[in-house]
Image 1: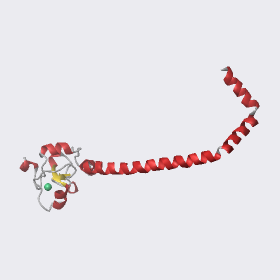
Image 2: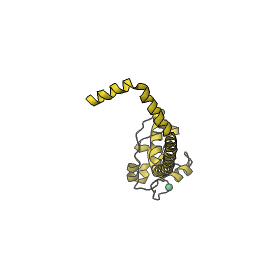
Image 3: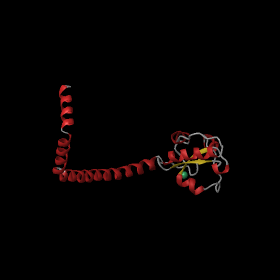
Image 4: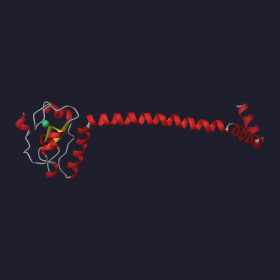
Length: 158
Ligand SMILES: [Zn+2]
């Protein structure tokens, strides 16, 4: 405590001197700091660049595998906007209900290729609830379009 007080006192009395020595020291190390900043920026830029690629790749894979999950959230919102009953459709549950098979073509649906098909489309005031959805391939669902081929019902399948 005494030492701290002493230094404070000293700095107050030698304010100009303190400033001068600081300035002097900075002046002498200017190049060093400049270089340090450049190196540091270069290092972090490289780091962020490498991470960015990894992040992109990670997100790409993650999105591919969870595409139907992202979509499920979107569908829920869409139905809610139309004041229709809506619940979060868990793709794993749907997978279990349909034994992993596509309701349109009947073949196995690999992870990441699934789609939640609305038997009565949301665009035609269908609800986003389990009794109105079926598991399909994304490709099958798209091929079928909205009502071009009559949608199978869950009852027919089970
Ligand atoms: Zn299919």
